[in-house]
Image (cartoon, rainbow, N blue to C red; front, side, top):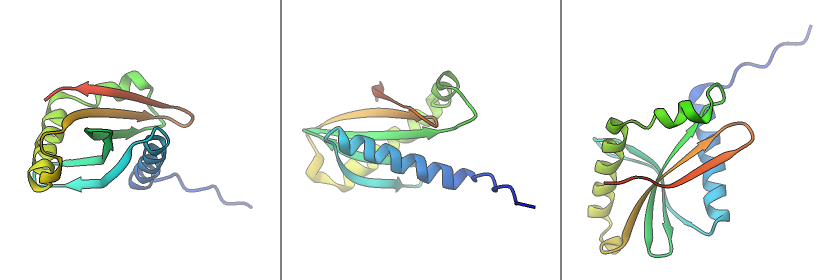
Length: 122
């Protein structure tokens, strides 16, 4: 009797989603600077350069929820943690000082990627 495939665990699904998001951003012409940048205050999934703009991108890949549910997952607390992590990145990578900063969110489901540029402000 054939065995059922094990359900994909959350970390594996997250890594797969981040890889899809990275490819998506590269195809749009962004240059990836860092992946999974962590500090005591939080983590940013992808940091990229879009011309003269440093982009801090949060990636959400949940197959069970729709885009509306995913959008609610980026609450004010999560935004604050991303912003604080971005500040740390910029303070430790002074070559990006003076550049514009943007906070994007990429929502992924099985088929689509919804990219929201400037999803929230500092």
